[in-house]
Length: 80
Image: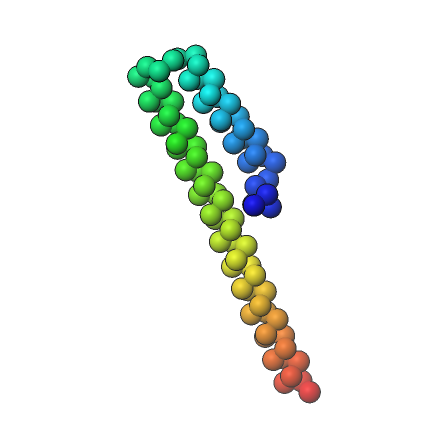
C-alpha cells in the first residue's frame, strides 16, 4: 500500500487529519463541525480516488508488460 502513496500524499493526509482534529476542538460540536466534516470527507474521497487510480494504473502496467513479453516471444519465434 505504501508504494501507492508518495511522501507528498502522506503529508497531505497527515495535515488534513491534524487540521480536522484541531477544528473539532477549536469550534466544538457546533454547526461549523458539519462544514469541517464535509471538507474532511471531500479530502478523503480525493485521497481514495488517487489510491484507486494508482492501483488500477499498476494493474494495467502489469498486464501491458505481460502482453509485451508475449509479443516479443512471438517475434523471436517468427525470426527462427
